[in-house]
Image (cartoon, rainbow, N blue to C red; front, side, top):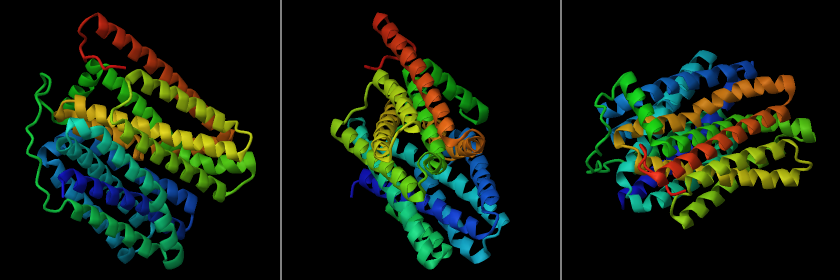
Length: 404
């Protein structure tokens, strides 16, 4: 079996384990009493270790190769989940477990993206990343449902154990896989990639690369807002339409279905979209979010949410492909860690603030604020991208031109 195929299988099981384990952890948290307070504490514990690893991921993955880091993180994460039903589910245990799971998930995701960039050729990266996005969409649909059904019928313990088993399967998919035999690419002039020097060097490269930096900014804003708005859907549907979790959950599922459509579109297209098109899509995503906040009926909401899923996947596949293809390999760990943090623990932390604000001003108004932020960032990014393309046509530029 090709190494890239095994990498996809590992990614699918890892994403299933991720989404099912978070649902299982929430079930355990709710069983402990004071559910709302405990949920906030557990969410913060997920955030801080992930942020610390993001800042030092380059140094870590220099010491431990990406394939080795992925295998180790997958096994350790499964071990933490396996231990949870044995030691009990009080708040202290859940907080420590959430911190470890969040840290290991960030290691796992960053190492996997870095490893993928070394085993997939440039001519197949778009299709490979579209397949990854397709698996992610399926995991979003199936993972929480799997944990919810098992937790509902058999209890939180079996749900957590199922998530751990899925994590072990992700390890087995790449067990004894050969390390990639590709040589590292030559990077910019900086040679110190440890600690703050590595972070500063990567940020300087992003600044000089112009269009790639703008694409990463668009990716970060879009995925962070998507992650932040997900919990807002529940109070929004209740406030605006008087409906419950049946409609809210279906809307999130429709967004997942839209992501599957976006993945199929990018797989068929087999190349990233242009930089100006992508930043314009960020503006469109903000407009769609604003329309959601004022949608007159639920059928229109379904249509708008499916469009959100399509745009998110097109952005994800394009930016991941561009970073894999154009960023020096030495900066892959930090860039991928930053990107996965924005769409994961970072976005979840923003969701805490968004839900608190929604209690004061209403969920619909918070969605409007998010929409305005997306439109503003998208317009600025589109203008900057256009200027860099025009400058590149007049002569060489620091970051090179991308055909927009």
